[in-house]
Each structure stands twice: as C-alpha cells, then as structure tokens.
Image (cartoon, rainbow, N blue to C red; front, side, top):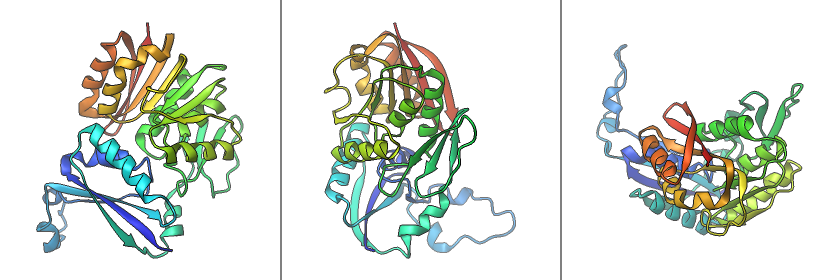
Length: 301
C-alpha cells in the first residue's frame, strides 16, 4: 500500500508541541531530533555515527504517514491552522512513502492502556475482556486520530473519571478522535457533544462513538464560536496558545459551578495558561502532570 508522508520541520525547541498537534491526526509519528546528540551517554565507548554529529541540531522533523485514500488536503489544512494558532514556525513537506508492511507492523506497539481507576483504552483490533467494573473504550488509530496513548489524553481521561457525574452535560472542545466525549458518555454523563475545527475529525469522532455503541453529536466549530448553551463540564485537550485564545469565551458556555479540564499544556506554559483562564473568573482546583505535560481543572464561579 502506498502512503503519503507529511513531514513538519520545526525549531528543535518546538518539537514537543508539534508532536502533540500531529498526534491528533495519527499517533504513529517518526521523529528526527538531533539537538541533544552530544549529550548521549556513551560510557561504554559507543561510537556516534559521524553523519549524526553533522546533522542539523537547531531543527527537528516530525512525520506521519497517511493512507493514500485519506484526504491529504484536509490533513494539511488542519495542521497549518493548528501550527499558525500555536505560533509555531513549521515547514510542511509532502512525499510518497511505501513503508514495509507499515499497515500492520505499527499495531504491535499498541496495547490496552489503563486510565484512572476504572477505564481502559483498547485498540479496536485486539481481543480484550474487561475486568469486573472496568469501562472499556475501543479506538482505532488507523482510522481515528489517536488511541489515548499520549500523556495529555491520559491525564484528561483520568480527570474525567474524577469530575464527571452521572447526568452531567459535557462538551469536548477540539475533540479529535472523540475519545474524551466517548469516555464521558461511558462514565454516565447525560448530554455529551464534541466539536472540532476539522471536518475530518468530526466525521471520524462520530464513527468512533458509533463503534463504541454511543450516540454523540459532533459538529464543526472554531473553538467555542459555534457552541450554544451551557455545560456542567468542558474538556479541552488542545495546546497552550489555543487554550489562551479560547479563555475569554469560557464563561459563556459554563454553568455556575461547572468544571473545565484543560490539557495539552507543556510544563513551562502552565502558569501562562492558568493566568489567562483565572483572569476570566474561573478558580483553579487541581493540577496533574505526567512527564513534561500538565492538565488543570478549573471551576466557574
């Protein structure tokens, strides 16, 4: 099978954010980053290939591979919009690719991922018998945008388990694969919906929800611009700059006492994001972290 390779070349310091944005489209990323090559531990006398020592240290490259029939133009439009909104200087390159058995080889790296106390994200192609009381969410990263393996998704899903109450109305902003909306529904939420600026994400999220036996409406919206009504719980697993841009519109869509779960935040942007959101009258309730990523919970007053 022939694939289209989309490569994003960026400053090395932006590599984490570029990976986070591109993982919305596919979690099977190829990363080329030589910025810390000389800091490698070679205590046993290993030699570093001379070509690596000559590699560009100031720029990194992140690639994803799309099946030829998937809409490359839609993917490029999505990436350009997200990179521009995040203020990241990225050059996008496109090439044909024919990886050896890529179609199936990557699947061996994906396994059920426990989240929180009771949920588990299971690759759609794997047989899995839930334990007693375990909530199973099936995702297919071949067709969907992510299987829940990224730190920010795990943080958000665990926080949903803590804050989502039976019957709550829930909005998933920048829904991507729809995974958080699906988790909320399986946790007993009442009215659940999700939105994304990318029509492809909206379509795939609906398919994922249906595959999980859930009827969840997804719609196209530039953040909260097309959102009506108010919600008990809003989940937004995006990037720092987008959360900051969305902050002024949050009070309009949140009920008094409603909760916001915000993630996709690199550690050194946490205070900036928290400041932008609390400036809108929301109160910071909780902070969680995994590696270099942060998730924050706020309450509308």
